[in-house]
Length: 96
Image (cartoon, rainbow, N blue to C red; front, side, top):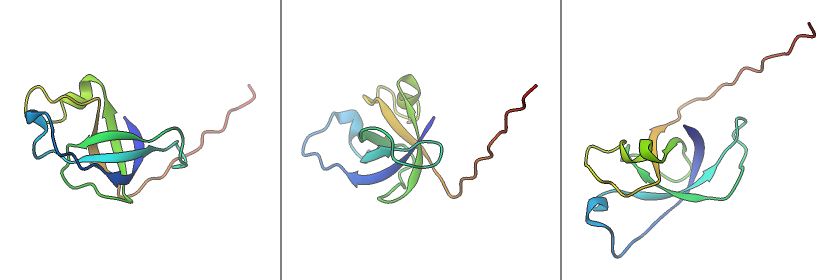
């Protein structure tokens, strides 16, 4: 699972029939500090509630296809959560 920020939406005039009703969003990947890292990609919104500007959690590959109740969803990335708050603790490394 990775963090990403929704930076846009996708409009499609034709879709696979299994994607009818599924929103596709443009995601900017984020690192641990929520700084943009890498190229944007498209993800299907399994929450049905994500929108531009929100920080989301995304799963990939087989996990992405299992995020939906329907079978045979042809996706590589799916939004599975919307982040309300994020804090990260830094672990200090001891010298011995």
